[in-house]
Image (tube, rainbow, N blue to C red; front, side, top):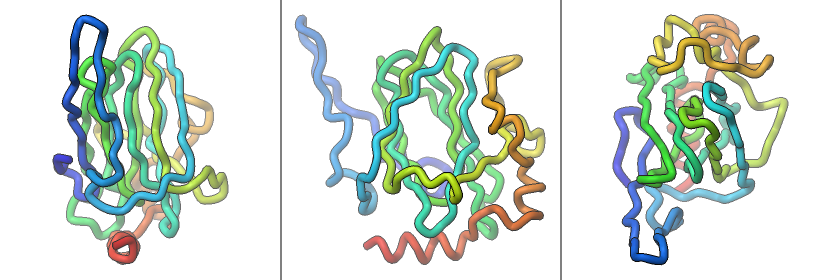
Length: 191
């Protein structure tokens, strides 16, 4: 896997074996991940063009690492460093995930994750290290100008929950965001 500019995030570019029948690829191999990953849940999200989901994150510990793939259509996938005290705090990186290249992104606990559906319909499958825990899951407003994410859509469609999410500053001031040191200690305990 290749490191992204956000510490704790990697991308995987599979080798696609194509012939006249179609194509085959290994979409996920635990042995190739940069660190241990316990599979607890697999989610599937189907979105219309212009739907924006995120920026989501979970309390650490236990957090929720994600391995994200777009199995149909195309999305702009975004990772945001929300770890207070991180050298990259507030930075984001975007990658196009689609059903042509079939890249995947691994997002560590404590990082924020969001995506925007670029195609008429996009199906995203993501494996999670922990199951859904509504009391420990949070969001930062994806259109927060202080984050400055360059979404290639004029008026993306948000859920009511995402539209009501705090800005990065509000989340920071309220103590909602994970600590970089806590995340680093958690990662060290995984090995």
